[in-house]
Length: 410
Image (tube, rainbow, N blue to C red; front, side, top):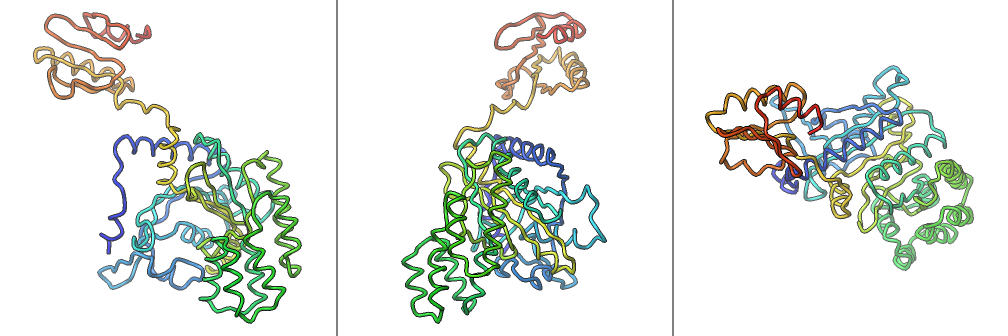
């Protein structure tokens, strides 16, 4: 089974690895500016953590491992769940611990999903407020901007709106899953055909048919949703969206958002605001998130929370496609090339430069490594010592003279 999980994982080239480290550093820096601190959870988790909780990962998607004592573990299929369990286990979170971010790999059976997938995201366990929801979405927008994206959208929905509508009708679990898939595809004619023979009140059918149409300009969606709501609970969800919109306006975020009340996430622990991010010319979401206020109750604690996660492989791919990465720095600042008789001098020079934090590679002249892309190359030859770069070259007679050249800005 482990082979099934890992066969879909791509091995990054060294250049791609440097790009990945660049984008992760950008994300870390941005998360930190909003007061988040990094957390890490174990790669192996007890199977019972996911099996006994509702709205979690499907068991067939989990990669199971049995330890020598016969206890069943799974390779971490999700990050939010173990972080929430850890947050719920304490007597209370310190003020500094409400805001957490992570960079972790999740593992899922490759026949169902992508196998090994790196995610970077945040979890916020602060009080449930419209202001906090707006701030978290603003953080997602700010992060996308830091990465260089200019054309992107965050589609925002409300998991509670559809769930309240489902309470008005009686459908089996299988019928609900079918209905969710059709709504997600925004196929109104197929929804109509699906509902035709089901024992549902006409008013409920009418509202269900409107769900895929509740998409686009936030103001228009809110107005349309008010006419679709069948009870006070659904009206409350529309009010939540209106308050969120007003908060996002304070961040000048209107151009980056749209509302979609047909947005349905496969993670059923989402309870309220839900969102996903799309960038130009890429058909899949690069980030997903939402509010999951009831998740901690499964660990015997009431703890509201909201968060999101970036799909790092997707972000890496689309940033490369759109040429958003800067020119990556070469591996070394200086390469020293030497003839055998000057080896001692070359090694001494290299150590002196390294002690000052300079990245140095030392190779014999004529070797296979003589075509490096270092900014400066130092030659130790029998005839002379020379330092050169693309613009100029200078001879030097001693190590002290060479170091003086660097101090002068060579």
